[in-house]
Image (cartoon, rainbow, N blue to C red; front, side, top):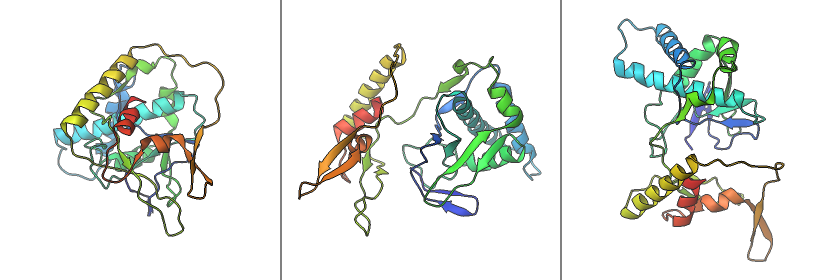
Length: 259
């Protein structure tokens, strides 16, 4: 994902800890119980800014969208059964590719303002190890845990890219594979057709009742062989979402959007 920077040090890792909950920038709050919190936090953010003039309407809407997404993620985090202790957040975007949600440059300042007001716990980033983490506290946490707040108040916004293409960046000096990076590709008639196909599948799945029964299983791994027939273990999701630089594999793009 994006290269990040937090606190006084840079945050250049792309893998969060196994105990982290991943931040989803395409969530938003829409409901009678969480919407007042979004308005309140947005007001507190601008009151804390050292400015003499009244902020413009479009700026207020951008900050409000960021606050709505933060609260929506905190709600899902604190109400989920995931054994996580924080949400891993990309607090600084240095790229504006097709995978990023526009208007999120205020994400870091809004998190700092919420932490200063005692609404958040902010965990600093660790260089090449862990992203900045957040968790709710105080009155905001109590509001999120209110049984009256339902999951229906959280919605997934439209516009998210469903065709995800990753390319392997080769190997490092010691032969260790470098992390895959997202490819900001150009649309063609084929990618547009694939996108519509994936969105149709997702629309169908959104109205289905899917229940999973049983116990959590260990992660499956596929074995690759070196030229001398020695196995190289690679996580399954890496194999399905990877492609060589400059090539967009139909299978990997379609699977990544539908899952």
